[in-house]
Length: 208
Image 1: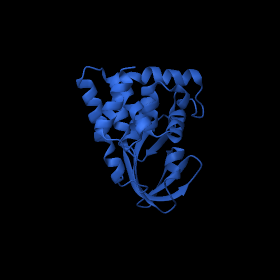
Image 2: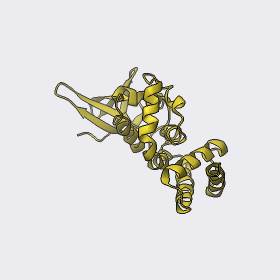
Image 3: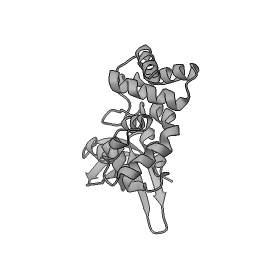
Image 4: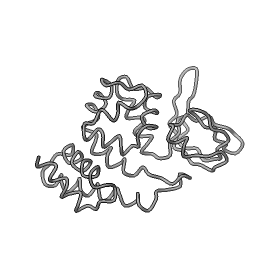
């Protein structure tokens, strides 16, 4: 199984890119977001999810492990295949998706091509209990265009949100409640909010 490819972008298509690795061109299916973030001739490193069937081998590429985890998680929902999962990640960042699930905002997920109201509601319902872990993981997503690492601003995000969720959980709130409260706090205060502000805003949300 191929888990990672590091090479030069040889071509970019409507839904795929050709990655030249030591003279071998690999066709990799990518989300619209990933394709917008790469350029012809650029050196990239993509995390790969390999799908093997009797008649084909397909490679799906992502700029982070978090994106690949979301891709796999989404396909566990009835009615969501690789095409829809990839479209979701092209429409929303993993953090946006995690926040939408934590807040029960299926309308945001419905904006994904190929996703109707019922499927969007099913995604929110079935992933609701996973929202705490997915939200915390989703905060690690922002990466530089070259895919070599996170920006200084994004690097500080996971600790503040994770600490706020941990603090709320220690106060007796269950993980799903803590996740939804922090997601709401981040939506209102912005991604630069520190732990203390997230906790205070989260507590007000939980007191409603």
